[in-house]
Length: 139
Image 1 (cartoon, rainbow, N blue to C red):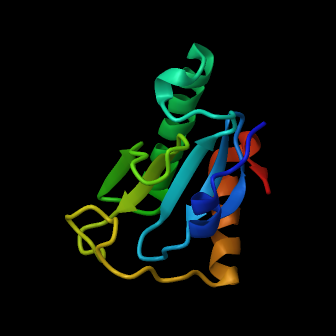
Image 2 (cartoon, rainbow, N blue to C red; image 1 turned 90 degrees about the horizontal axis):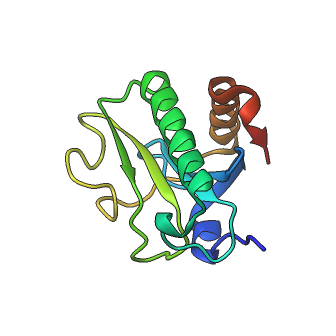
């Protein structure tokens, strides 16, 4: 049974679900930082997913990154699956802009996180819904 890792629960907000993944928003408004977590139990690596799920993960990651790049005027999209701290398989999709709080360094631990207001979260959720269409189901 799928359960979200406690660290992901603590550090992010659930926006909704795509066909395979739960879509999260990092609680750091320094960057539009999204996280995709395949809703599969006990998976830590991409290669542990069934082949169809591997393909679906890439489809969802690519679609999200492409939609966010235009919508958030990204200079670069950072896409990564690291898992050194949180072993549950998850894909970071981070909008980067020249001059953001960490540019050009990685975002992890560079500056203190800035929280979102509920109004900001609601706006991002609406924007994501419009960008992803019917494949996105709100939490």
